[in-house]
Image (cartoon, rainbow, N blue to C red):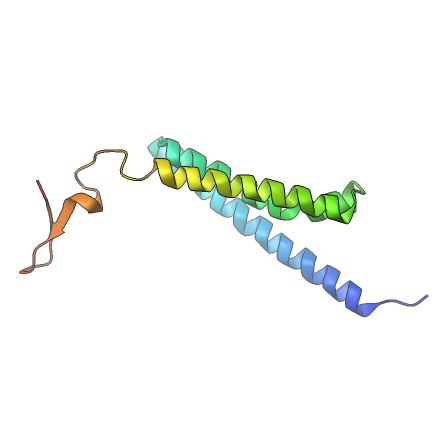
Length: 123
């Protein structure tokens, strides 16, 4: 029985990097969830869903390939589809989150005085 070390090393590398991606993606998704619960802004909800989809998508291909015995190409295709959907939701979250509050404290409505550098409303 011969063991191909390069294949094993590649598999270990992929498992480690996908695990780190899953942990960090879950953390970002959780923090976006907490921000949404605190603020209630629809953009934060979309941000949470988008990061969740990107995270699941990045891990899904390998999981389907190994656990569900799905072909490699189909697994990568599903992974790419879910990741692309996540990025689409992220784009939406940024689009709806841009200056939709009308808050006078938003950076677009503030000026900085040259004398002391403090922010003052532009109104």
